[in-house]
Amino acid sequence: MSQNDKQYIPKRILSSGFTLAVVIGGTIGLGILRTPGEVATVVTNPLIFVGLWVFGGLFSLLEAVVLAELIGMTPRSGGTYALVRRAYGSFFGFVIGWVDWLCFVGDIAFKAVVVTEFAAMLYPAARQWQTPLAVIVSSVFAALQLRGIALGAKIQEIAAATLALIVVGFTLALVLAKSAVISATASVPTSATGLGAWSLVFASIIYTYDGWDYPAYFGGEIKGGGGAVARSLIKGVVILSLLYVFLMAALAFKVPLASLAGKELALASALEMVISPLASTIVLVTAIIILLAHQNLMYMSTPRILQALAVDGLAIRRAGEISKGGNPIFAVLLSWGFSVFLIVIGGFYFLLHLLTFFVLFITVILIAGVIILRWRQPEAPRPYRAWGHPWSTYTCLIGCIFLTLFEVVAQINTAVYAVIFVALSWPIYRYILRSRSNNIIKL
Image 1 (tube, rainbow, N blue to C red):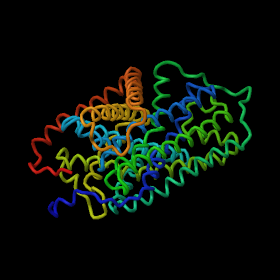
Image 2 (cartoon, helix red, strand yellow):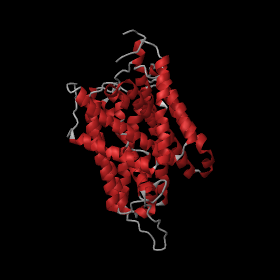
Image 3 (tube, rainbow, N blue to C red):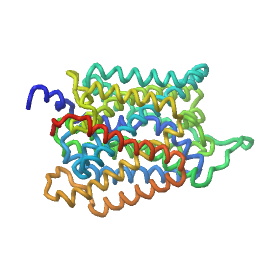
Image 4 (tube, rainbow, N blue to C red):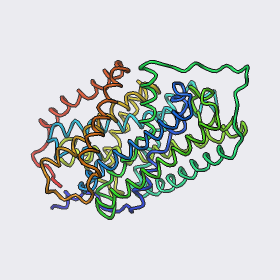
């Protein structure tokens, strides 16, 4: 291998503890703070409410034990694309990488928008500047990547530990507080019904649990090999699910769920009711800090999708170049540019449903990839094998397909945008094939 080619190969410099940090820190964020209010617009029965979050945790664990097989047998960075490239071939591999990149860029834009929404709650005058402020937030964290991966990894490990402690602290605060009651004269909103309402419930829970697969985006940079990464990932999902379920149970049985319906920051509203008005401000500040920390992880992960595509000759070659600091800088800049575009054209609900379509699409592709590779490459080394295969794998696949079709029927307008974005992969792929050089680096 030439000296020039080495600039495309990442080094294994991340600790195994980083895996747990990205599972927990990559998932805990906006969802657990805001989406309980979205779910409460439809479900106000505490047992059903908690049951939905238990189901979300179990389904995420099922996904994890299935997809950990792919993560364990893929010793490279790049996320979804890297995991299933060999199962789908060149074009479909590119489509998968393209959609995954869109999903991450959309998440960057989504969280930047919400940071400014929360900032406007603290300082209402900022509301008129939400879009430019969101662009600034995204830009700052893109610029941080210029310093290298070591800084981003340290920020992530600190953030993950902090987030876990915050969730535990909020849970204990709710458990120890007196139960809130709704005044007889208070106005209680009527529960929403219909496909659109339940679509929002499923989208909210899916989004809140999404993010546990972040280690796949650093598979070629984490010490210990694929098997260690897969096992740490499953541990992270178990810990995460327990944190979520206990918090949601404390919330549901201490605060009337109807009073949280539609609240932009439901957890803050709950603590305000059972503790003091100051608690709401504390949660709001915490939410902003959490979302800012999450921008760091997304700007670490997103460019690595393009980097993996570029290494295989399926993206601009410069996107595959890794700086001395360990980051693909040109890929960072491309990701930043598209995130700014989405910030300008979208709002909270548009981006939430768009992300749900992308997440479900990617999950279906990954699960099908497990089945395809079991059939095509039965003898391939698998440091971790999917528990309960084939029953767990097919159950997970059918469930994801059902949720995808449900979201399409309920949110047809956003589904059209999602299809348009996916369809753009074809002309881009054709352009890359015509313009790329004949020398493709193969890992």
